[in-house]
Image (cartoon, rainbow, N blue to C red):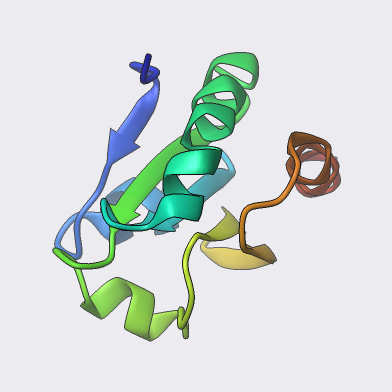
Length: 110
C-alpha cells in the first residue's frame, strides 16, 4: 500500500524537487533488491501521509540514478536524508524504528 504522497525522483529532477523545495524533504535512497529498504518502505509511506503538507517525501532508486547518491556520499542503503533549504539537516543509515525517524523529522521541522 504505497502512499500517493511519495514522489519518485531522478538525477535529472532532484535539484528541482528536493533542493529547491519550499518544504523540508525526506529523501529515501533505496533499491528494489535491498531487503532493509523494503522493510522500512511502509514506514516511509506512513510518514508521507502523517506529515502531508509539512514535509515532502521522495525516493531515489540508487541503481537507476547513481549521480545523486554519489554526490551525498551514500555508500549503504537504506539511507535517508532530511534536506531543508537545500542543506542536509540529518542523515539516517539503515532500517531504523519509526520512532527514530519521527524524532529526526521533528528536530528538522522545529
